[in-house]
Image (cartoon, rainbow, N blue to C red):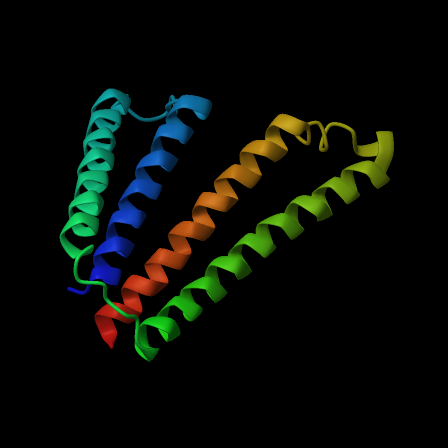
Length: 147
């Protein structure tokens, strides 16, 4: 496994861990399923710290041997950035369209637009940002594995 692939895996693990922490803290555990939040929290907390330690070890071990990225690495990063950017733009566009619709509809459909407030917008954009990062790293890992 190359250094870039290892860093992609660790970034995916830390992003997923932060996302699980965020969703559990902000939205809580759903009532329809049994509560495994404490176990899940513990697992992703450990995954987060293991990923951080692996990333530090990779950086320390390879700091003396500076690896120059080749064309393949740049191509894979480009594809990952393309998908991540598209995902982020889609999330921002959904938010802007929802804001536009909620402001132009007016009081006729007020019960449908009550969910649009600054807190909801913040949570949606924060989750979109992390999902874009996850999509980027997932695409990079896919291309590292297939090529």
